[in-house]
Image (cartoon, rainbow, N blue to C red):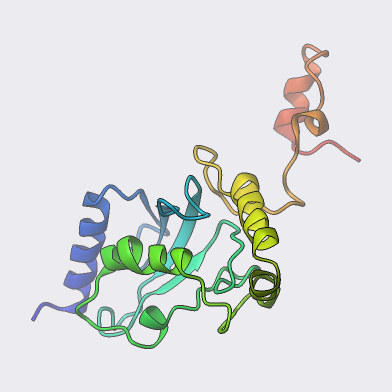
Length: 187
């Protein structure tokens, strides 16, 4: 049997060869980000999320830690931390699983079949059970606001986003560049 570090390297390579965009943290193989697309035929279709993965020293014998960096509205994902409530990752993990399973099977299943009776986001679970159309609308709003493809799918919160109007108009020729470089304009 290969060592955990060899298995970690092999699983990372397999994930990258499966056309997932993988970005390592601190040039190591234990922590990294993966760009994850919402599954087809789901409320999340068309969205792109940045997922943080941390592999423990005992991987693959111990499950990876998986969390959403990009905001998502889902009963089984904590809205603040991005933590995922998924039995196969948290409790029934097996060394037979690999990282590709996480992104091609486990996370798509989570998004396709939310479980409001075991929530990490109580508000989303309650809304899903009480008013399904309103829940579906909220999911779509979050996808549109936070998980648009091509915008980096970074950790966006409503406090950090600026519209073009807030950034200033293009009427001023030279001063606009200074404002954009300096950051957010003063209120």
